Image (cartoon, rainbow, N blue to C red; front, side, top):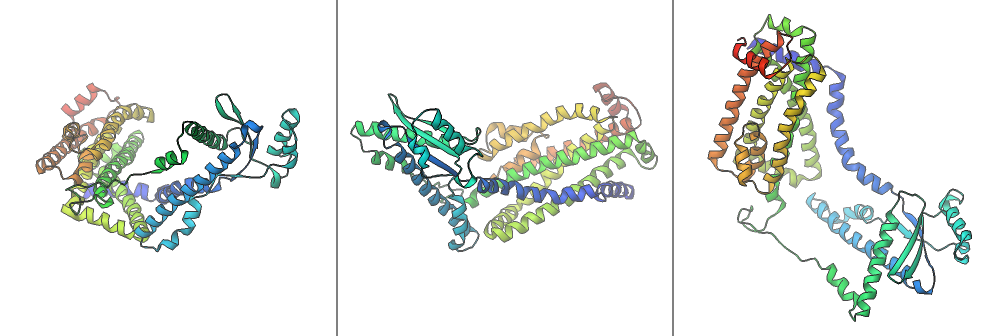
Length: 461
């Protein structure tokens, strides 16, 4: 046991002492925050486009007004939605609704504004002279304070309203899309008016959003379904993806570590002092300690962030994890799944000489790991579907799917049966991997079905 712990400590310190480990440990929360903030910052950094509307003639009368009306209506709808969302978030966080005013202003920000047509542009008729003026107002030839972002020429033809949009940037289709929608609405209103239907009635009908409330006997209070009732499924899905990330990260570290030590002949030195099983167990334990350390740091940061920003949600999450010992189910499936895949990767690493050898072997394993990730998303909606229940009994899929299904309360026979099968296969993998690990560490043969079978049949202790 002491040799296993020494190997585990050596494996842990080999990474924990590096600067890169701590940088990556701290960088992930920072980039996670930035990942959520960047879209918001980019949206706020997007300039408000100055747009000029020009009606081409008497036949286009009213089209500019239609575009302006749609812009005003959209601003009103955005403000209302932003107000509801911001006030709801403020209430959940325990803050007074008044604190949401700044968020409302940001969320209801328009991307374009209608400005007055420059006098010289309004005075000139269609032709090359006007096109030259348009290009000048959209380029650096005009001072920035007077520069425009788009100029829209509105017209009507036999088919209905139309427009030609000049944009300062060829890749910016914001104004084009908005004008297209406004003209579509204008044409609809004209058609309805000709048919004797008041467009206001149709618009009011389109705005109607029925209030539909979901109830279930399995909800927390036996009635209306709330976010608290959906939270267990979300947590189960999060644990499934967490386990998947642990396997990919930890197992990859193991594979590279074993492969590097084999190429440097370090494994041969270790085998002179410890058995293959002890070395394999120590390495798996050391990398497990490394990943647990990372999870504790990330989990601590996340828990503190939730407790400060949304304390009510943090309490709900804690309540879900402690109800019926759910957290212990999660931990058991994580331990079993990690052990099963970790020893497999370590054994494969003992047969690899170069990263190219490892990459060829990672492909089939990654294909296996993709399957439960695809099924687990379906399990969130229908955890008792026959396909999900069947796949839950496959040991290589069990830890992912049962972690997602556990919050829905599957039958105890499935929990005990799948967990027993998972750990039985995990222990079998430890035994097989130990024999293959010794054979691969002491030879220069490439991994194949033949060499792997010979390693299992004739591997050492």
